[in-house]
Length: 502
Image 1 (cartoon, rainbow, N blue to C red):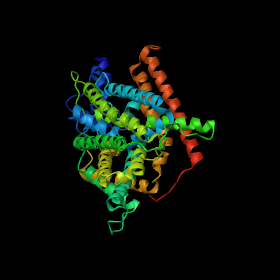
Image 2: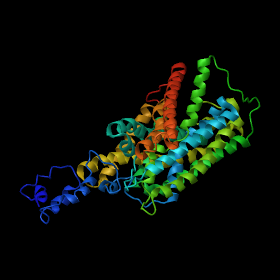
Image 3: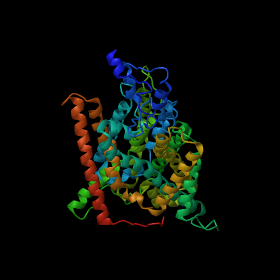
Image 4: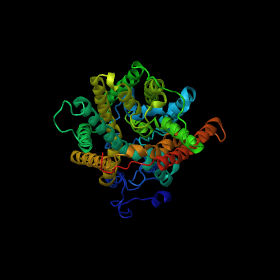
């Protein structure tokens, strides 16, 4: 009894818990009248107490039921497939043929296959790490990194990359979508030959796209609710990829085509070109920063853990992604060789340049419409990560669900911010190799390997330990090389910094 008296929690000796920023205050205060003495043997439940400062994203966290990513866990394997495909296939894949013009058929195919296999392996790692043995679910990339590397290092390594690859992706989607709307208007009006009205400016096209994206975002409260939107994104991505490579092959090759790499001025330029081509291939794969969020929409139980459904969805998705990316790279290189223009939407511009005279304007217009729709759907997935991060701050302080009016305001403010950045920095796509080198590459190819070692603790110098250490270190090394090559390329070729002139 002496031990029990030392932990007497009577009202006289109880400290004031009303100021504690903890979700367990309500439970402990409400039970104080009925239980004055609590044996120390029941203290372990206090370990589940979650404060705003060290929230780990576990399944039992009340905030998970309030936030856009985890508000609904009623997803299925098919909804995961839709999200993965909509977020994983992007216009950066249209540059793959440019990389092949540097490497040729054999090495281009080898490097593309290696990058595909490597990122698929790190996806498997993330899917397995999503749920711990105790049932804690890490439905956000940053939370998993904090668990693996600690609060300071985890946040330092991942907060900026995740926010850039989410918010920055939304900015680029406005630039791409708005620019495609402008191309669509020019194609339909035949550069003013048909339409008498004054064509929209680049800024106006960006504004049109942003307004459509935000209207769609207001209609869906959480990630699971946009499954049908992601289905539309999946269909449009597969359709425009197939149409582009089929049209390139069907129209035949230009007469003076060559498959020999273009001669460069110096050895440094040659190595820089090789690294830039490698960067194009490795940056063609995206979506790792949202894969844990997508898995967070799936139900889970001890008998049916979420990683089984998720890996089935990943497997199906990447079969289709391979069927889109490899034909784009190989077919585009076959059709245009080293004449592929090195710019955003390279193969699409090659079609207009070499086959515009004998290609129906309706076909080109249809491709542009499909690309705009795809950008709108992809915006919803990456934007949801930012919405979730903003609502975390509110729910951490208020201990309640974010009201509907505030969600509307958050989405409007985010749309306005991304629109402003897109107008201010319309050349952001030119910086993608540089920024992607130290954000996307380590987050996709390196960090998952180190997180597996930190959390799973495989046998030292065992197979899994050596594999993940080697891949993680090589991924960081590639990241440094890609950043250096991108910086060198900008220094040599310059940057068309057209501020506020989209």
